[in-house]
Image (cartoon, rainbow, N blue to C red; front, side, top):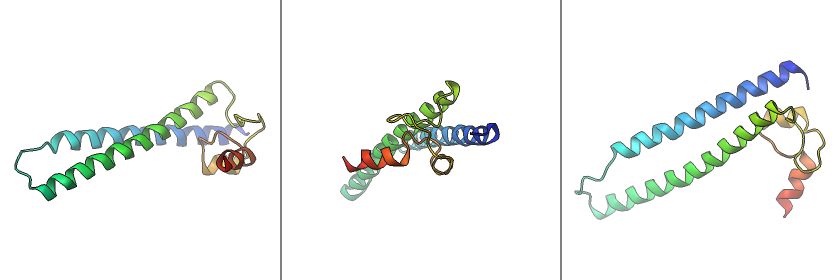
Length: 115
């Protein structure tokens, strides 16, 4: 992979990392401000509980994505970025452009998904 393309993918990964961290911090601040004042009716309490559960699940997905981004950045530091974790072959540039934190080549990803 050309150095310029690698640098661009690194920039995109670092930007995605900042966005994820910023989103988590912003939601945490909103959740702290939206404390229960004790005067909610049953419908409001149910909506509030659903919203909190939704934000927690969304947070899990974002944490998982953040781990993938961090792993890709670490691979760049170790000069192993772009190699499939399963077969060791190179991941296509088109795939990395679409999904810069891809762990597997297309064939291995399809195999993982079929399980």
